[in-house]
Image (spheres, rainbow, N blue to C red):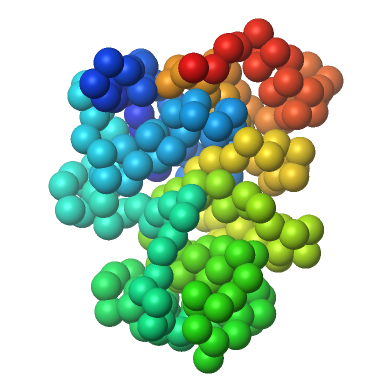
Length: 235
């Protein structure tokens, strides 16, 4: 069952076509990798799905056919650089999400706080980059919603931080939700994906099931990624 369906999606900036004829489905209970080099269109696609950008054509069909505000509320979005107010402590970030979102789950928050070993009384601006990413991921997953969008959650993080973040991603109950994870660090995360979509210059270069790639094509996701992008010149 598709939680999210994208049909013929296009997004243009002055003089640039950022997304061109994107068609894909995100099924319930799946972790989907949105893979591509920097500046390939991944962030634009995630922001368009999240309702932060308006498409120029095409459509996005949200969970349960939701539209408008309800559609945006069905999405929990982790941007590539989440900025918290300078005064905010870690516990304040969770309180902010609790006040802002009706689908905030204290149970989810407590589980993630423990799993990611978050220092609740520390000021966020004084944390390391890796710990800030843990906080950002935790508040994103504190919402009990249908689709989670993660934009480069592993960039510039030490190996222990990456391991913790991957544990958190895999801990999300899969039955009625899905994760779309954008990254160019394919090797670090390929084993968690159920399917992948490769994007370059705003177009889908490949879209397929990981089991087919591994069993029928006899390749790792990284091998196929390198094979596909070897012939793609990014803008």
